[in-house]
Length: 354
Image 1: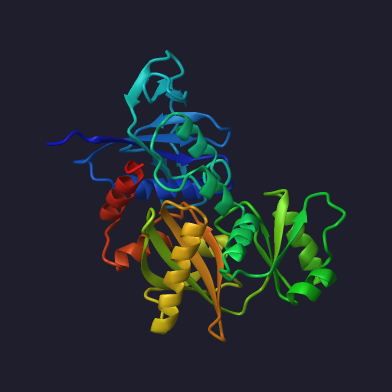
Image 2 (image 1 turned 180 degrees about the vertical axis):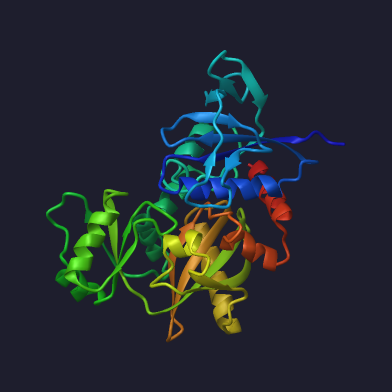
């Protein structure tokens, strides 16, 4: 039997998506074949400290996105690039832990999905599952994403940028004149719909800006698109493949954080989406083009708006989409014939290709 691959799953982190990361990590660990992999779980708490966790029992309230947290003990660790041959170090006695062959950064949002953690392990010469520094950073910043895609003639929603404490930010009237009367306000560098608001008047607009600025110094003011929300999963490196397409049908005002993770009735997920073959082909083609334009590797989920006139716009690419038990990325691949365990095998293989 071949030697097992030592996999380190990172979870938690300091972003507002800490709890979602824990749920993702839980499902990833469950999907990893223990006949093929030795699994380490590393939890990053909200203060930024790293902890070595028990992979067989590392969560409390695992099914509650509001109360979930990992089990801390005194096994605090740190990682030093190229120190002790790709190993984490126990802080109490500076003894090395088992070596690591590949890192799965099951982290969402800033300091996890934006290229920072990818850069640490690149310095260490360790393979990281998923996108690298550049693509992670570009896709995390929705403004940069739109600029790159626009340059490649890939359709995106019109938007304006606002910056914290700037005197140049538009008011609602100015924004509505350019974008229409229904506007979305969202942090440029955040995921899971954290800090996102739908607004139709000046009071809502000002409140939404204040909320978004809690999470980022740069905010997107984006044209509201009337239509349907489609999602497709991308898998691969230089020759990516795509899953079947799903549709998100929110029962709330829009597909908010609550609808995604807290309210089980917040949205209906329709897989496969009931759309024409020509739209399916266009979605798959645009998703692969966007994936390559943004230098993505391994995986990404590409989100689209489809208007009533059958016009497609890419909303965003998520370079480490949720892996919770209701997340679209693994669900789309499962409906495409790839189990969670097979999906993790493919992703790890893609990362180890270098």
